[in-house]
Amino acid sequence: MGSNLVYKILKKHLVNGELKAGESIGIKIDQTLTQDSTGTMAYLQLEAMDIDRVKTKRSVAFVDHNMLQQGFENADDHKYIETVASKHGIYFSKPGNGICHQVFLERFSTPGDTLVGSDSHTPTAGGVGMLAMGAGGLDVALAMAGKEYYIKAPEVVKVNLTGKLNKMVSSKDIILEVLRRITVKGGVGRVFEYCGEGVKELSVPQRATITNMGAELGATTSIFPSDERTLEFFKAQGRAEDYIELKADEDANYDLEITIDLNELEPLAAKPHSPDNVEEVNKIGKIKVDQIAIGSCTNSSYEDLMKVAKILKGKKVHKDISLVIAPGSRQVMEMIARNGALADIISSGARILENGCGPCIGMGQSPKTNAVSLRTFNRNFYGRSGTLSAKVYLVSPETAAVSAISGVLTDPRDYEVDFSDIHVDKFIIDDSMIIKPASINEDVEIVRGPNIKPFPLNVPLGKSLEGKVVLKAEDNITTDHIMPSNAKLLPYRSNIPYLANYCFSTIDEEFPKRAIDNGGGFIVGGENYGQGSSREHAALAPLYLGIRAVLVKSFARIHKANLINSGIVPMTFENPKDYEKIEPMDSLTFDNIYEEIDKGILTAKNISKNYTFKVKVELSEKDIEIIKAGGTLNYNKGM
Ligand code: MIC
Ligand code: SF4
Image (cartoon, rainbow, N blue to C red; front, side, top):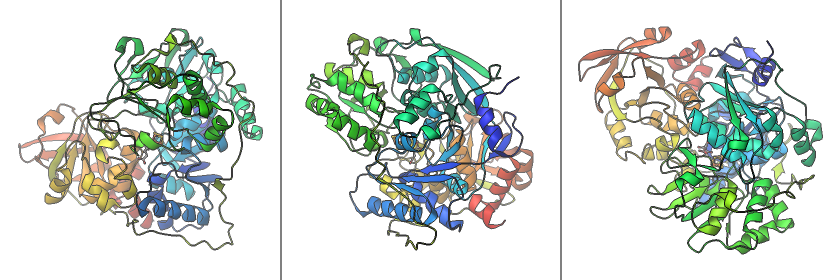
């Protein structure tokens, strides 16, 4: 039986372990990326590893998240990243050059290579056939230091695309359909490989919308073959030499197969507050809209913005709507500026933002109280927009643009717009905002602002663990719940003591104080705990507050890895019904954890309610060593 594309790439990069779904494997990483809000921490960790130059083929540091410079903090962090990158042989993409995933796709993506990035949407580069995965900053730092990256060898899901998209239906609708079927937790431990005749219909930016938002499935990554459409993209980017053809064998094996008939697909929207809460735009109906935001790493390509410009041309944004648009990169912005599309957008009444994440991460443009906000983004988690009462719907650029004119959620098929002349053979190429690293002999001074505080370190695991359940949470807790991000908090991503005061603040403001008053303790949660962002701050802030273990029904992949790196024990209920029995502030003990952890099953005692129950600790041998040492940094020191 032949091989699928995912296992072909894995096989080429395998350093450790057996290539069998579910087994822990270590793979060689060719390239890395960081962005600023997770990057400062990653580079502090890289510095702690004491290596002179990165060992990867190429590493790139982007600044795209913390772009509001209301105080010195963000600007200081930008300078730190620029200098630490230069010293260690890392390219630096300046603020204003664009969103990491969009710029990486345009200028660095390479079919067949492996990539880890300190951002959960790193799989965007899967749009050109790269095996690209999101990770915590520490794992990215380790990859830069030349260490292999550990994942569970995935199950591979074949997503068979048949037919052809109807007019005004887009690749955003494809991934929303996948989310509707698979859900935000259905992708854990899996990679989604796109195949079938429908693939040929999709350009690289359209494919990248799908691989980008595959992150919302909880998937390890998503990937497309590298074919003539990929070559067309690389030629237009002046990088034809980076192209290689890549595809699955004819008789490739898959663990699961789903088929999406593109002919049948309708414009879709993800309703509040989850990317898998998907319904047809038509069925949701013409609800009144207050704000529309177009951009983010999901939908901010040249093609996306040209479609938006064509829809808006000669029209005016509805009087009750605030339309904001953030192009994904300087390349996109310059192209639409030069061909006049930007003028059409401006003339319609849209507000233009700089090239960056912007409203997607709550960096401004929080909607008004109780607002309905349509966004072309990838996440509509509760509170993420910065307005707790807002209702965010995720839609395609086409749906967003037509709704901006009508003032209500509108099926874009109601409008007839011709997109046939959008294609370009050549993008504008200007890499002057990508700064090459210093040469080995140059002396670079690393500039550190006062905002950068040391990261917390755990202590080795003792014989037993005891403490109180200082928080009991529901299913699908996101890292935006655990460690919220917004314009006020993002400047403190290198200051865990400060950030920790806001841990879980969207759902329980008393949590930090309660954790400290009780000397730390345990967090209990439901299914898919820690979905969303790769931010390791969602592990480091609880660590700082004394949390020693998190006990849930199931974990999201990257967050579980971040907990392990922090030395916090990730536990799951053997019997999910035991979740119901535990109440907040119950006292739990794990009497023999140091020995039992090797067997993967622990005996827990609920002292307050006087019963015992079993919990599972699903860890590789290496993970167990890491937990025993009190986290990855302590583990590495001991080696
Ligand atoms: C996000 O989209 O949630 C972020 C902000 O890009 C995060 C990274 C972060 O928290 O800094 C992600 O997706 O990993
Ligand atoms: Fe930036 Fe939003 Fe993409 Fe995260 S999801 S990288 S915040 S644009």
